[in-house]
Length: 126
Image (cartoon, rainbow, N blue to C red; front, side, top):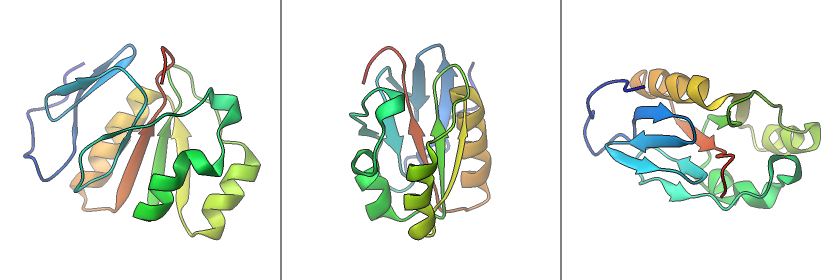
């Protein structure tokens, strides 16, 4: 689904998504990625979802967003409580939802000027 035209290189907006891919400012990605406003998308070598750890989010902890949206693939899954506690101790909010919902929410919050990051888990590989 195409969302809207590119909003400019300064914002890393989701311009389209579908299946196991996402397009950021016109560039299509099929692997798990982290999207940080003000910086280009980076590859996210996340393991399978059930084995996520703090180390898998080291870039996010360094970026220190107010909120991290976690796209969990085609189905909504929840971040394990042990990992939520790590984010809470760093005062980073976390919301998990399926990838399409995470993409739409990310764009809305970004348009509001929120300091938000997006982690998208692609089920076809990392």
